[in-house]
Length: 264
Ligand SMILES: [Zn+2]
Ligand SMILES: [Zn+2]
Image (cartoon, rainbow, N blue to C red; front, side, top):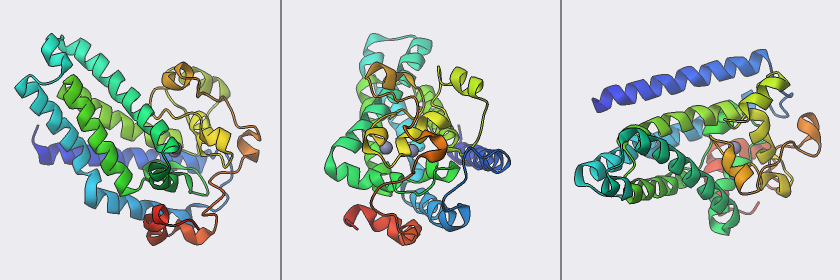
């Protein structure tokens, strides 16, 4: 596909989904926001623009590029095994999702990586904009990890593109402050990380933010024992964020960018 067209389609889909989830949150909020959109969105959307300018726009293209390179040169396990495309697609998608789950766990456990990732957690509320709030250095490291996985396994380009699009969409979905019927959450949670499942991961309590690492498929948390069904204080009573960076001035774009290099 023409790269400009691909970029336009991806951007168009992202903006449309963002608007749809934002509208859903406004019409059916899950919980009242502590700080609200007005004070948070300039910083959160500002970081999206910084990320987009630095790395975000190139990430899917670069990872798909690595997949095309692997396919063209017979690199990676799947290419060596001459797997059928459907099989390569399925296993490729699952492997990328597992890699992102493991990467997320590592970003919580390794102190200098946690300094980068904790900016995502320092948001004082969780809503659709939080789903895009990542430090550019975290996105860059994640890019390197994804390229390594794609090259090692020779994941088909179409699986990589589908995964990138799905990850972007599910990240906005599962950060949404949107209400859905309990039965729907229960059913969806069998195949997808839902907002109520991911919100536990944004609790100020360490035992809770060190659980539910999945972004897309919910199965890894169940498999590796990091699943937590609900926050102890309930969704309405829980506190979102971290014990540090609670001053609302930390929601400003310049503060978001420097948080990894500060302790207060
Ligand atoms: Zn996290
Ligand atoms: Zn999150």
